[in-house]
Length: 538
Image 1 (cartoon, rainbow, N blue to C red):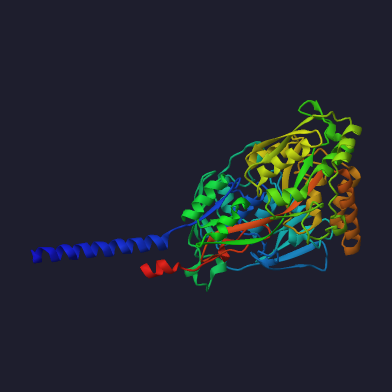
Image 2 (cartoon, one colour; image 1 turned 30 degrees about the horizontal axis):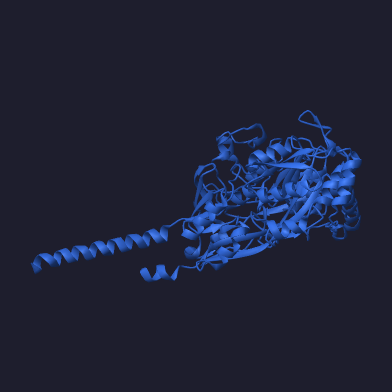
C-alpha cells in the first residue's frame, strides 16, 4: 500500500508544482489592460485630430518632437532642430538607427513622405502645418522645412505629426490619409507600421486593440525592461460602472477615464491608486449662428439670445454638483499657461436669470423655445451629466433644452458638418499656443482651415488677423494681435467656456503612470513594481 501511495504522492506533488509554475508563468505573462470610455477613431495617424486617437497612436507611431507629461518639449525622431540664418528654413537632425516595426530603417524620405501626407487634403492635421511651403532632404539624416514666412513656432506644431513608412504605406494602398468624414475605410485604419515602443498585434474597432512591446525600440537601448509593460490590451468600455467594476475586480490595470462619482470608492480601495491633475483642455458650449438649422429659423443668430444663454449658465453648480469639485471654471476658451492666454478676460460673468429673460425677450425668442443640445456620451469627464445640468439651467429662463447623446464619432460629425444648433465640445491645445484655437475654432470653416468651426461664424477681418499670426515674429506685436482676437471672439459669443477639465487616472498599486497634461500618456515610461504576493508565490 505504501509502495503504491508514494508514486501517487510524487505524481500529485509534481502536478502541484507544474500547476504552480503554470500559474506563475500566467501571472508574469498577463497583458496590461488599459481601459477608456471610447475607442480611437482610427489607427491612421493623419486621419483625425482627436485626443483619444492620438493617445493610442503615440504608443505605435512617433513624431519628430514630443511632449512629456508636463508639456515640456523633448527630442523624439529628431535629436535636434534649429531655425537657420534664413528664417524661412528649419533644419531637423534625424535620429540614427531607428527601425520600423517591420525591421526596415527610418529614412529622411519616410519623414518627408509623412509630413506631405499630413498636409494632404484628407488629413485632419493639415492645420498644424499651415504656412509650410516645402520639405526636402538636406543631407543624409537631415531634413529641411521651408515656410512661406518666418515661423518661430513651427516645432511646437509637430508633436502629433506621426512618421510612418513610405514603402509600407505605398505597398498597401495607404499613401493618402483615410477620409473619415466621407466614411472611407483603408488599410492604415486597422494596420500599422511605426517606430514606436509598441507594435500592433490585432485590432477590432470598438472592442479590443492588442499591442506588444517593440524590443528593438531605439528608446529602450541599454534599458532594463523587466519592470516595463510587455503586452497591452486596449479596451473601450463606454459604461462607467463596467470600467470601475472591472478595475476593482482586477480585470483592468489602468483606467484613463475615471468617473468622478467613483472617486471615493477608488480612494478607499487598498489595491488601487489615483493620479490627479489638470488637463490642457477646456469644455465649452457652441452656438450656431447659421440663419436656419434643418430648415427652421435660428434665433441664436441674435447676439442677445447667445448672451442670455451665457449668463444663465451656472459654472459653479456644474463644478460642485456635476464635477464633484474636479474642474476649474473659466471664461476663456483656453487653459491657463498657453501662449497668448488673456488672463484679464478670465472673469466669469455673474449668473443673472432676470437679465437673461430680458435678453431673450429683446431677441424675440418665444418662451418655451425648444433647442436640442448635441452631446457626446463617451468623450469628456461626465459629458452627459454636464449636458443634463445645462438643460435644467436653461429651463429656468424658459428654454426647453433636450440633450441628444451620441458616441463621440457621430457627435463630432454632427458638429463639424454644421448640423448642430447647440452643442458641447472640448478642445485641447497640443501646440500650447492660442493660434491653434483660432485656426480650428474661429476661422471661417473650409476644407483646409476652420475645420472644427461648426457654428457658421465667419468674420473676414478676423480671418485675416488669424492668418497673419504666422507672419508676426516680434513677440509684442503677436501678443497684441492675439489679445485682439480673443476680445473679438468673446464679443461674438459663439462659444461659452465652462471649465478646464481635471483628469483622474486609476491604476493598480505598483503601476506608475502620471497624469499627462495633454491626456496622451506614453506607456513606454510606465513602470510596474512586482506584486509582493506574486513574488511570494514564486
